[in-house]
Image: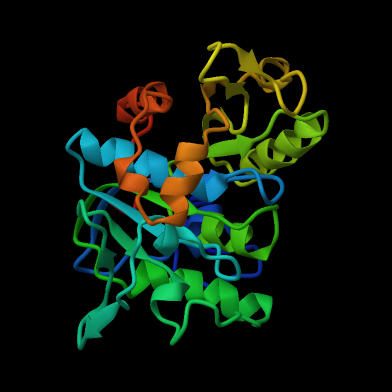
Length: 284
């Protein structure tokens, strides 16, 4: 160690024995032609809770507010974003890098399904290759000017989640869950990982919260009583939205028409994302 050491290893080029790595040491820079202001990760402790749906609907909501939005689909082995938006054409590129595909309303999207010869081709890759692919979606894709980028994360707290949190300057995460007894444990895992990685938590979205009968207008809790408020208080985080079980939403996703879904469920989440406290990170 040099006598003039200031203990700031992240800005030091010396390879000394007492060098300490910081989280920012692993951050990757976006493509030089990309200007990304805010990056929000959409996570879940388990699969099947509607994480990709929430990612898509948040991107649509912010686009309707006049922002340039983008989706980086980091769920490499289970990509569903292109189908929700009805995107059939493949991503392209040039000598400068990869170019994302745009949805009907102009949302920029990059997903492994946009690079595969057929959308039903399985991705049978080991963890390091999947992680490097996610990194390439950040470093080699020419995103242009983006106000909000949403990252559709794979379920759980595994290798890809670690890669995203270490490599990409995520400004905050939104946790997606469902109204079941095990929700507390699942949310706790996501919260603890975020705290370990020093990633701010924007809040929780509860999907499949209730079913509203079109005849009597009564709300029915199909999956039992919700525990989301109790769980949110336990971790001192906000409940951003409660999405219903609505056949119209499912039909829109199946037909690639997610941009036509009308509803105010995520307006509160959008208000919070607009706040300066959810600030742009070092990738800006």
